[in-house]
Length: 350
Image 1 (cartoon, rainbow, N blue to C red):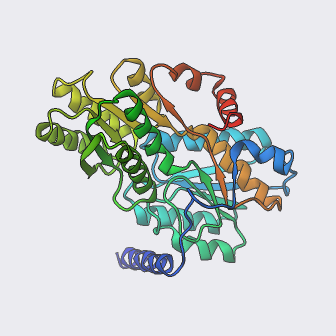
Image 2 (cartoon, helix red, strand yellow; image 1 turned 180 degrees about the horizontal axis):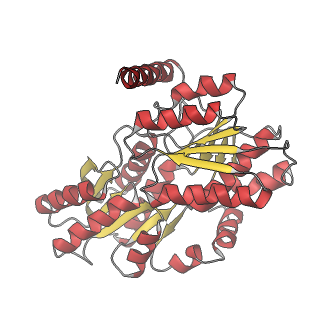
């Protein structure tokens, strides 16, 4: 018991120190950082994948494995690692709120001799203490979607603000008469949730025809989002649409819309592109999602990480692809030619 109390106290102190450091230093804004490269340009600018030191191995820690997005990200890590013969250990916290548990996992990976560490933090500050520990051990740390460690030297992921922008543009184009809309946010204060929400609100506000009547946290949770959507629909039965910061929340909202007898009248969009979202889109329930292509993101992130291990000097940010998915284009982005479609989009500047 004394050991557990000591460990917990030490962990909480580390979190406190990390938060202090985060406020003392200017944070990385992965959406606007100018030292960046698009995922599709890696080979063109840095050449074929380089030779790695013998025995190279990678460690990765994620938010949780209860969310398909993070499982898919790990699949991408292991897919790329398998192609080049680099073993990857992928671990995660028990839930998306287990900040101390995630920190403990990350600290363990640094001490186990991995050549590089890929992290997807619970919040912008909970893995801050790992930065100095990894630096002392000469282990590069790559921040991979979606919270952003303030002092992260390297980030791989999509432009979070653009998620909300894409959905807002759909409403402006497809609901030109305007109307009432609502947002169900992710975890309060998390960079990705803030950026996605602000992107949506700012863009839809520019049209002058829409009113955001509610913007409430869903905490990345399906049931919480169902309850929130139910309350919003009771207060605003004339609502025309929802934007949710991830797909799990969006699918909870879909159930609330169906329960209120408003399916077909209220558009619902999510973010991530998980398989259940695609299935719901094809079934005519979920209107759409912004696919962040987690498997491809995992592949790109590990490639970037290992290029660093090989001594290459990459930009601070490697931006990964995303696309607004509806019933009209779901097959193009979910089939075997999805990567080809994304490269075509990149070439076209989309």
